[in-house]
Amino acid sequence: MTMEKPVRSGGREAQRRRTRKAIVDAAVRLSTLGSTPSIDEIAAAADVSRRTVYMYFPALDELLLDATAGALNEPPVEAALADPALADDPAGRVDALIRTLLDYSPQSLPLGRRMIRLTVDPAAGGAAEATGPRRSQRRIEWLDKACEPLRDSLGEPAYERLISALTMVVGWEAQIALRDVRGLDAEAEREAMTWAARALVETAIRERDRRAQNR
Image 1 (tube, one colour):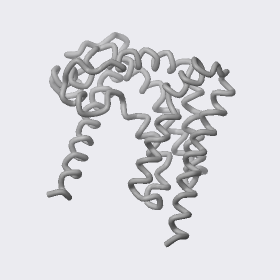
Image 2 (image 1 turned 30 degrees about the vertical axis):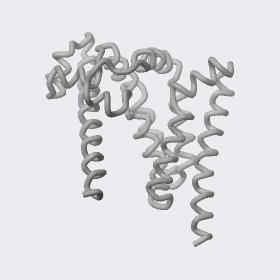
Image 3 (image 1 turned 60 degrees about the horizontal axis):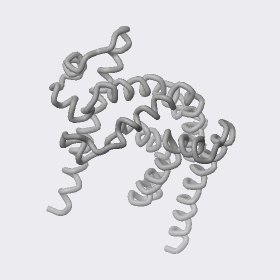
Image 4 (image 1 turned 90 degrees about the horizontal axis):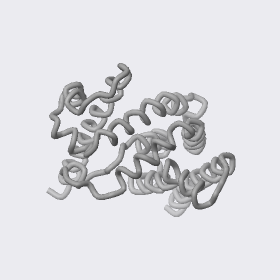
């Protein structure tokens, strides 16, 4: 029984991610038609109920911001992570992810600021949001793809810790701290974020190598 519980929990979480992605993808498709879609239209396009949409996105604005950010960032990020020259270079892949996100930050960071304002308070209701992430999992998916060459050699606990640590130094929140708290310009921001992410990846690799030597 104890071995099966994480599998069931992981399955539910994967289903939540798929449902959320279906809703966002539907919003993106409808938004490209030139008008603002309604919740009912998005629910129909995603093949879910109106109630399900509200479980994941308490406000239409939150959903449309998520969809807009995804439509803006996903194509260039996916292209950067697919570069065959970086296939076996996790640090280089994380660098490429950061570089791409920052290249598009003039358009995406204002969306990010608005998204954070909408999601920073506790959800008013909805079981999926009460027990899972409040925000899109794109960042986790991209970091996971970037670090994929390390998954087997690090082992699951160390690998998941690396992804969690990278989540703190890559993304809108890190940009806002570097700009609003540190007052950095774009070049210094890029250097700091890249240095921090690379330090985390290289530390994880060194720890892996030390464990291997001590066996």
